[in-house]
Image 1: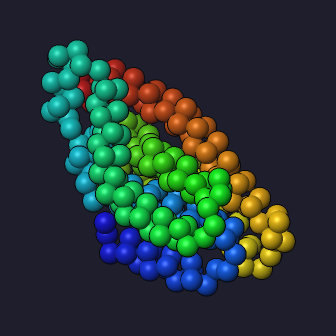
Image 2 (image 1 turned 60 degrees about the vertical axis):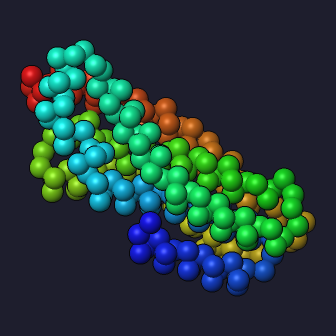
Image 3 (image 1 turned 45 degrees about the horizontal axis):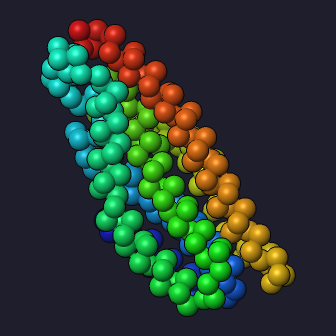
Length: 218
């Protein structure tokens, strides 16, 4: 994990101490889980482009093409490798959220953060890599294009969660209705991840097909 990740954990701990109601803490755990794991995917892709980006492996492309090994399998292996590398921050995040939640009365909502956390682990590599099959330029150009591409899913997945957390600073729900916010956020995020899995996966698959037929690996 990066130094910035440690900073996020510090902010999360400070906010959890300030938040009073259990439902607000559930909301905080949901937002932090999504934000943290998606950001960790960004850090991995940025720090290890030679491992995760398709355009970094021209020689391997030629070998794959001669062996009739589908490039789609190469793309999927990169996704799974990033998920595997995210297991460590996932583990630390699980411990942090568990400590936070165990201080509260356990209900079915207590585990909504875990659904969001697992969904974030799954979708984070997709957000970072779905556009990589389309990029065949230098690393500087690659980084700019990937930043623009990953901004799109982050806007509809993460930004609404941040807005909801910000609004909770000014709007206080009655105790009997406080569970509504974490429930809505977890359902919204899960549906958004499912949507992203199919749509971004289709975009990536189209890019891989174009890459297989391009002069870049001819």
